[in-house]
Length: 196
Image (cartoon, rainbow, N blue to C red; front, side):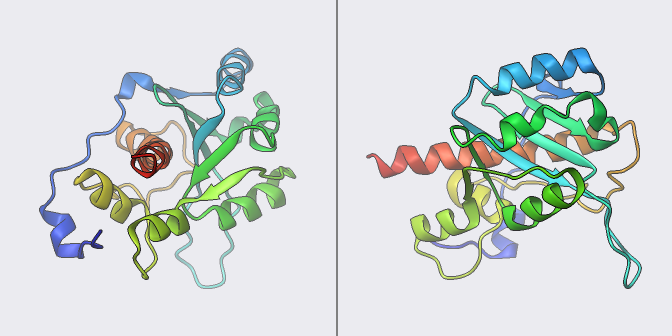
């Protein structure tokens, strides 16, 4: 499998991703209870976090500002300013029986532990998994993996937005949800192709 160039990725059709109505933003106790109960039913989840970018030299992010967790049919977005309502999220993230898949998990692991004392357990770093699967030497991120496995272009237009501001705009919700959701789809696609 070839690693596409930036130019080749730009030519691909845009990845539409999960519909807005299947993205749930958790901001209160009732939503948190039902979201966490739903997530606990799954053995594998797509996972990511977003933090407000730092543009000033020496500035340290106080992120994560958003935690994204995906099932096949839904993505739950947890803005961390409402963390008091979903402290039980740690039961999902540190559960050794639930696999969490994503890109750049080393940084996510660090900031979750620093800010909330959450120890992320049973994770799979997809950049390494895609590299092994595709037999490529260069590091692979979500955008390249989506291009390689699905022949589509994952939009990164909201990447540098301010994730600490609430409410989130629709394009931010889509971007954040797609990051977690594509991680799950990539994991399942690799597993599917590996069994053929």
